[in-house]
Structures are given as structure tokens and as C-alpha cells.
Amino acid sequence: MSPLNVHSEIKELKKVLLHRPGKELENLTPKWLKSLLFDDIPWLDKAREEHDAFAQIFKDAGVEVLYLVDLVQESLDQDPSIKDAFIDQFINEANITSETLKTITKEYLNSFDSTKEMIEVTMAGIRKTDVPNFTKRTLSDYIRDYPFISDPMPNLYFTRDPFAVIGSGVVLSKMYSQTRARESIYGEYIFNHHPVYKKDIKLYYNRKLNATIEGGDILVLSDKVLAVGVSQRTHPAAIERLAKNIFYQDQTNFETVLAFDIPKKRAFMHLDTVFTQVDVDKFLVHNDLERTIRAYAITKAKNHKLKVTPIEDKLDKILSKYLHTSISLISCGGDDSVAGDREQWNDGANTIVIRPGEVIAYERNHITNDLLESLGVIVHKMPSSELSRGRGGPRCMSMPFIRKED
Image (cartoon, rainbow, N blue to C red; front, side, top):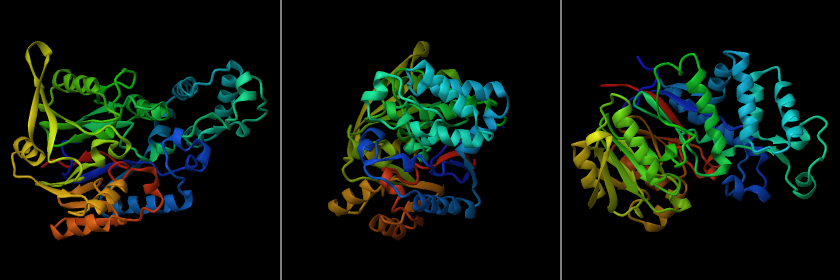
């Protein structure tokens, strides 16, 4: 049996991957916020407290919680050559141009007795002041007032994006921004070297391809239907490549990829920021996502080709057709457009399902949460004053590895 099994957004969750925020958040400064894709600086201690509460909700529900750092450590510790290859790759992808600095950085990363500590340093970002005997050597060192040898990765606690599990396979994301490009290195080593997760895993997309795709745009609606957002961060060409690989690379049951064209702006960063499933027949949706939406059905054609069919219909009708049940749409923030905009900005439309009709949501989005509860959905409310500053919700912060089959 494959160690990955995700054929639904809502079937009972058995195993999930998280990343507990680390010192990468403390390497955020006002000067570099925009380039690191943050609007504000979370307080690390409080963010960890909130994240621990998030993890505890899963554990109390009987879900096994995995942590990204642990899986990477277990992958690198399989053989010294794997760890050495990881360090070389990390340095190359960190865009360190000076050969001398590359050598110094490698010596620094090899100086840690603990593989886990070394991995955490790569995630946190390496300050020039961290490296022993660092001195200014290049013209860039003298002119560019930049404190890091390698950039921090503050977005890593959104484990949904760097890779996505589909069925018993995985998409290794080609990230949209250079800032996040290195995040998918960790998934590459897990799925190539981990004693459990390198086995029988189909790779449906490779991070080395040109067209960008991120996990927040991928929703596994059933064992036959995949939904993917055409967003600011996921290119149509990547969706077509993914569809071909799923249809023809492996003997999967997937028959249709639904491509939803959403606005290309930060507030609509990924499909799952405006559209998530909460029950068999219920979806949470931002009211700015028009009920009539541009959608396209991608299916198999002859000679390993694809057929693309435009769909002009209301969103609930599209979902009802492909999921074979009557679908209700629940507006984030209810009928109040001001509340809808505010709560969607704080990821009110971004929930993670533990089992059908039972979700985790940010407690701050009280209007949406009350509406869900009035419709019979169980809502586990998690604290979010700091975590929400990164512009991502509970679904963004969690990557299911196993959902129970019927």
C-alpha cells in the first residue's frame, strides 16, 4: 500500500504534514518584507503557540501529525552522500555567486553535529554574521546592504504550496516567486530518499519544469476529478502538463481536471484562498468569486492528447455535475460584502477538513464560523493573531498524506 493516499478533500484525515514556524520569522525585517512576500512580522513565540494549538486539534481528532524538518532529517541521515548533495544543492540554489563564499557556507553547514539543526538553519536563512570569519570580499558585499548569505524562508509554514499529494502521487511545485523557489528542495529529498516516502511514489510534476504551479491551487475533489486554479501563481501550461501526467503516466482513476480561472492578484493568491470544500455537499466560497465562473474541463483525447472544453455555468452547477450530488455554496462572511472581504483576507474561506462536515478554521473569522455551524458543520476554532499575518489559513498550513478510503 502506498504511504500516500489522498483522493478527496473531505474523507477522514489520518496523517498530515506541518511545519512549526522557526527562526525564519525572526529574520523578517520591515526593509525586506515585500521581497519575502509578507505584509507584517509575526511574533515567533506566539506564532508557535498558535501552531501548537493547531497541531493539537489534529492529534485530539486521532490524526497523526508529521513535521517537515523531521522528514527531511530522516531523509538526509540515510547516507552521508545524501546530506552532502543536499548542502551543495542548497548553496547552488541560494544564488551565492562567490566561490569563496560557497566554500565558507558549506563548511559552516557541515559544522553542525545535528542534521536537524543544520536543516533549520537553511530554513531560517544564513546571516553574514552567523558565519565564522566572514569578511567583505566582493563588490556586492561592499555596495549591497543585505544581511543574508541565503534568504530566510518565512513562508515554509504553509506546507500546502511546495508540494501537493494527489492520490498516491505527488506534485513537486515549480514555485512562482524566486523567494519561495527553494522551499520545494525539501520535498525533493523526502520523496527521493526518505525510507518510507520514496517508495512507490509517482511524480506528477517536477520542480525543474518551466511553468509554475503551487499546491494551494490544487484540490482533489474525488478519485475522478481534480480542480486546479489558474491563478497568479499557477500557469495554464503547468495544469496541462499535470493533466497529461495524471491521465497517461500512471493508471489512476482521474478522468477530469477542472481548471478554474481566478483573478490574478494577491487577495486571490490560490484557489484555496477563495474556495474550499467543507462537507460532501457544501463548499465555502468568497463572494467575489462570481457564481458564474470561467471554467474548463480537461479530459483525455486520442494519442495521449488533451481535450479542453470551456464551461459556462454557475459554480454550484459545475460542481454538482462532476461530483454527482447537489452542491450548496456558503459565502465567506455571509451576505455582508464588507465582512466577506475582511474575513476572506484573513482566510475565512480557507479551512482544512478533518472528516466530512468537521473543519479547522481561524477563530477570528466569527461570521463565517457561525454561518458554518448554523448549517451543521463542526468548526474547531484555532488562534490566529500571528499566523494569519502570513496570509494563509489552516488549509494552507497543512498537507494531508493519508485520507481514509470508504
